[in-house]
Length: 182
Image (tube, rainbow, N blue to C red; front, side):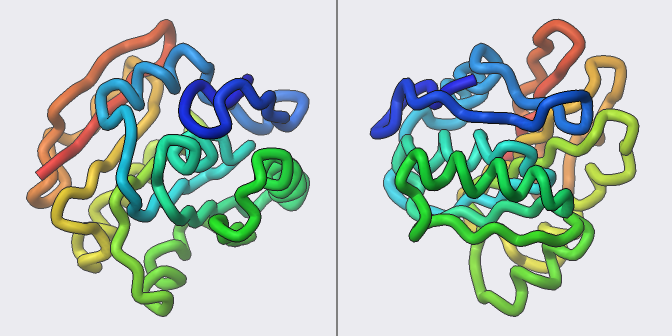
């Protein structure tokens, strides 16, 4: 796993050994960013279920200016910190050692508007995709925000979360990506 493109292109990233996290492959990551970017002029990314932090790091490498990564596993937070330091993004990243279900409340107190929202929970945890609607209802998304959900290909996510309509739903092996935009 590595940074695919942008200012930190090619830097290798660590992930937790074992099956506790399921890092997004470089191929899928590149496809996602080709659909939503591929490059950005500032903005804020929020990554729920951070794992290795690779989606936030990729976003920063491609021009996003600030990231909030939610991860409750302390070992994963250590890996995220190492990856952030290796990529020299320590000032741009806020690692929130917290359950993703607390993200809306945590971000409301920070007064941020999210431009990219990545939701990639453990595949057996379908209920976590409802967090997209919580972000919509809390008015935490910017006018041009994009919601990106990675999930099992057998799972069908809703056609919309409020005003955010599913615009793309490609499948890669056992994974699917659902992209929502206004």
